[in-house]
Length: 167
Image 1: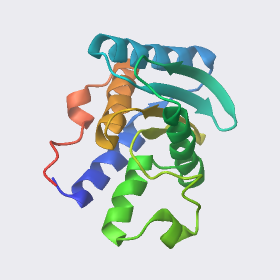
Image 2: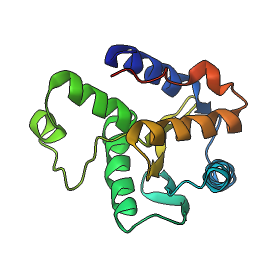
Image 3: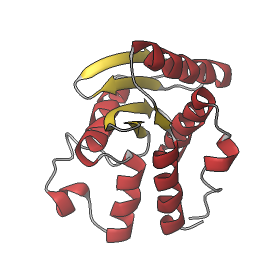
C-alpha cells in the first residue's frame, strides 16, 4: 500500500474512531487497554492521554527511557496543532520531501512528525485531545493506538487497520 492509500485509511480511522464524550473514566479505559496490551506483548512503551493542556492518563512500561516522554510531548504537539495524527504529518512530509520545519517553520525540538499520536474526536465537538504511544517504530505506535481505540469503541480493528507496509 502506498502513502496516499495510507493517508486515506488514516483519515477514515480519524473519522470513525469518535467518542460521545471524553472524561477521566474514558481516558482510564483507553489507557488501561493500551497498558494491558503492552504488558501482554511486553512492549516498551509510554502511554499518554490528554485533553489539550490537561493530562488524563500516563503509564511507562519497563524498557522505556527518558526520551520516550519527550517524544510523546513532541508528537502530541502535532495533533494539537493540526488536529490530525502525527503519522499523517509524517506521511505528508514524505510526500512533500520536506520536514515540518521546512514546510511550516515549526521547531523540531517541539514537534515530531512520527506516528503514535492520535486525535481524540468527540461527536459534535471535534478534536479535544490526543492519545500518544512512544517506544515502537512509528507505524506500530500508530496502529497500537488504533487497535486499542477499536477495542474500547467496539469496532473491528481489521476493518480499520492499515494494510501491510510495502514501502
